[in-house]
Image 1 (cartoon, rainbow, N blue to C red):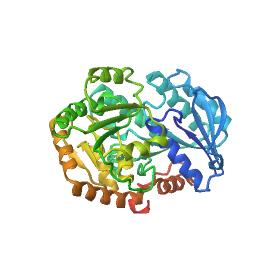
Image 2: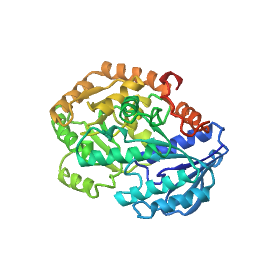
Image 3: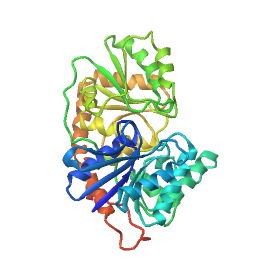
Image 4: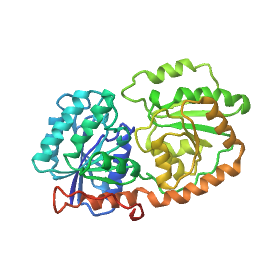
Amino acid sequence: MDLAVVTPFPPRLTGISLYGLHLCRAMAQTGRLSRIAIVTEIHDKRGKEHEGGSLRLEIHRIWRGGHPAAGLQLLRGLKRAGPRNVWVNFSFGAFGASPVALISILIGLTLAARQGWTMRITAHEASLIDPHAMEPASRILSALFRWLTHLGLIVVPLRADAERLQDCFPGAPIVHIPHGSFYPPHALPEPENPGLLFFGVMAPYKGLAILLEAFQMLRARHPTLTLEIAGAEHPRFPGYINRLQAAYAHRHGIRWQGPVSEEEAERIFARNTLVLLPYLQATGPSSVIYRAAAWGRPIVSSDLPALRATADEAGLVGNWVPPGDPEALAQAIDSMLREASQREQQRQRNLQAIASCTMDRIAEAYLRILEPLPVRSAVPQPLPQENL
C-alpha cells in the first residue's frame, strides 16, 4: 500500500511536525507500506527529498504556510505525489497563522475527498472542541471540526475527547488512537546537580511566566538550582520569548536554549531532574509527558483535563498543581527535589507504563485504519486500548 501524508514536516521541529516525523518513520519501519509520500510546506528545500534512506520517506515541499492559495497548492501536491490513500496530520494552526490559509487548506482537502482520495485525519486539538460553548471562537472551531468529519475518518489521540465528540457529533466517523511515546523506555541517570526543564513550544498559554516566578521562590531554598528553557517560539506569538528574556535577564540560574534539534532532546532531559508543565491551557495530549516518562524524568504539571487524560490513559503518574499558582508550583517542585524516593517511585511506574504505548504500536494501530474501508460511509468504533 502507498500512502500520502499531509503534515508540517522538519526542519521546523515544533508541535505536530514532530508527531508526523516519528509516526511516518514508525510506519515505514513496519515494512507494510511500499511508499510514503509526504506533502508538506515549502522551506529552503524544494522538490522531492528522501529522508532516512531505507525508511522510504519521499518529501514533497508543495504548499506555503499562511498562503491564501495553500489549499490549491496542496491539491496539486497530492496529484503529483500519487497515492490516493491519505493521512492528514491536522491542527488549526498547522498551516500558518492566517485563518484564510486554514480555510483554503480545508477547501483543498474537500476537493481531494470529492475527487476520490480516502482520508484519515488526526485532530490534535480535539480538546478545544465544545459545540455547546457559546463563545464565537468556540463555535467557529466546532464548525471547522464538523467540516473535517465530512472529509474522512477522524482520529482523536485522547479517549476522553473521542468519547465526548462521538456524543456531540452523532454518526461522525471518530476513532481513538493514543498519541504514543516517540521513544521506548530508557531510564536516564539523575544528574549530579538539580535542574528543572521546560521543554516545548513557547507561548503565553504555556505558563512560562508562572514558572519563572516559582523558580525565584525555589532559588532561595536551592541556591544551585537551574532552570533550562528549551523550544521554539510559537508562530502566533512573535517576539514573546524576547520580551520574556528581557524581563528576566538579571535573574541567575536560567538557561535559554531556544530551538533544539531532535538529536539534542535526550541530552537536555538527561541534565535535568524534573520536567515541568506549568500550562494555563492544554489543547490536547502532551508529547512532553510521554518524553519525560520514556526517559525516566518525573513531572510536575498543571492540573488541566487534557494533561490529566494524557497521563491517566497511558497509566502514568505525576504531581499535579492548580494552573496559574506559582506558590503551589514551587511547593510541589520543592517536595520532589527533596524526596529522592518519590522521584524514583514515579520514574519506575512511568517507565513500566510507557512500554505499552511506544510509537511502533501506534503505527500498527494507524496501519489498521489505513486499510481501505469496505463501505466509505461506515462508522468505525473506538479502538480498544488493550489492542495497542
